[in-house]
Structure formats: structure tokens, C-alpha cells
Length: 142
Image (cartoon, rainbow, N blue to C red):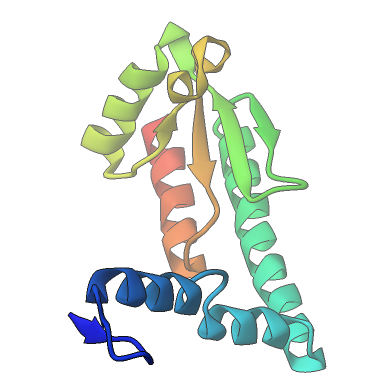
């Protein structure tokens, strides 16, 4: 129990709860400073370079899939490449094939709902070396 200004007793929990919820209500300081930093000239340049890197990865994945004779969507305005499953495979069968035969993790299209069945998604969020290796493995697998 704490004491009030008048000298009476007061429970500590409501005081602690108010202090804690007030202090931690809203966006943390470090997140605010990070958000501020991306709008600086240096931050804008870094964001632009990162976007160019990931979109470059997407372009490599699109090219590799097309060369392998796969039907490709995306990879132009977002760093995700959508690919039609070859040979009538389901998206989960394609997931298993890529994982077991190429050691590449993809996302089965059915995870995005019934309209995603028959497709899989490859993410370009990776290093250039890893994306180049995935491109080699796609070419060897299909």
C-alpha cells in the first residue's frame, strides 16, 4: 500500500498500472527515431538502394522461371514472383518438389486461398547470391 498526500493508504497496483500504461502507450521512442531516419536524405538513399536490390532479385527470378518455361506473374511492382505450377501439380506438390529436389522453399499458392491453387510464390527478399543460386536450381529442376 502507498500513502496519499493526505496520509491515507492507497493500493499500489492502480498507480503502477496507470504509470506503466501511460509510459508505454503509443509508438516506442526507438521506432519513432527509425521512422524519422528514413525521411532524411541518407535514409531515402538507403531505402531506394534496398528497393532496387530486391526488385533486381525479382527480375532475376522472373527471367529464370521464364527460361525454364514456367508461366510467371508479378516481380515488376513488388518483390514477389508468382509462378504457375507445371504439369498439373498442386501448389503443395510443387512446394514438396522444390523443397525435396531443389532445396528451395517457396510459398504454396493455396495458402492465399482457393484462387491461389495451381500457383506458387517466390520471394525476392534475399541476398543476390542466394537468388542466383535459386535461379540455377530452378533451371536444373524444371
